[in-house]
Amino acid sequence: MERPAGYSVGIDPSVGGAELRPQQPGDTKVRGQTGALLALIVAVTSVSTASGPEPYEPTQFFPVFDGVESATASESVNLAYHGGSVQVLPSVYLVFWGWFGVDPAGEAPYLIRFLEGIGGSTWASTLTQYGEDARGNIENPAGQLAGIWWDDALPIDGGLMVLPENVQGEVQRAVDHFGHRADANYIVAVPTLRNDPHFAIPGGFCAYHSRMTDTSFRKVAFTYLPYIPDAPAGACGANFVNPGVQGLLDGVSIVVGHEYAETITDPRRGSGWLDDWGQEIGDKCVWIQEGPGAAYNTEFTTGTFAVQTLWSNVAGGCGDPE
Image (cartoon, rainbow, N blue to C red; front, side, top):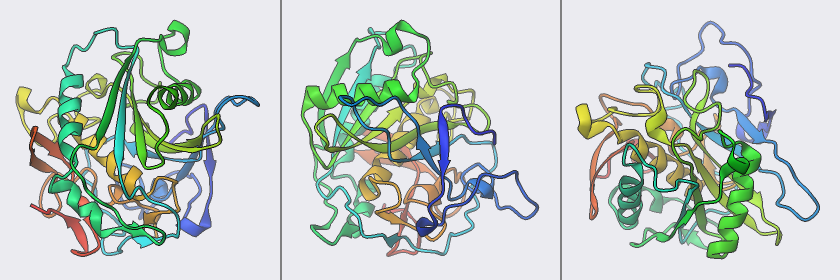
């Protein structure tokens, strides 16, 4: 994969980092990408000033589905704790940035219902087996969606695409708007046709999660969410579980659920829960369409949603708690 402009590769041997290289004979297909990307840690470069937010910490990308089911090289390796903090009391703040009421696929109401129901769900209960030394195990309370903000500020001063440095600024505005919570995931959802140029292209990504330092020197975990229905057919999960019109938004809940779970268990990439290959709780089970660990429909109090499974150390596999 050609390195996307605006991103730099960071190598961290403590979490099994690997250099970016062409595919080699024998590489295993993992997460819809080559094995060369298995434990890739990517640091997103951004504009920083003395008074502005600090650059991102290591970033974990959700890979585009290339039509080949995941065959995880480390499928028998459990997640290990790397000594850092997790989100014991998780909450989510959702920002619709620059939408101006335009939502041709109906992503916003679907996404809101999904996040309104995720707390206390059986699907999210897999997370409670993980924790940290300081505060114990992760909890799964109901009502984790703590706030919604329709911020109609123009992304990148009216430009066509949202780039990493602009996401960083919007996360800072979200913290200013909602207030700061150490255990919160600030999800920045961008509108149709305003996506990062590397969204949903071969070798690109469907979303990512990371962490930054805000202007008050506090750590802020966040997710960048492109407009998932803009992806070419199948690239980011449309109809991955359900056929026809019913499955057009499958990718929204699959991608957001993945980023939600990984932000909780590994908010600072590499310091929470991941395996010897550098995979997080969602990476090990992504893009499985059939057989054990396959993506499926789950019932929340707010509706039925397509989700991927999450890795369970207790089960020693991609757990289906239902």
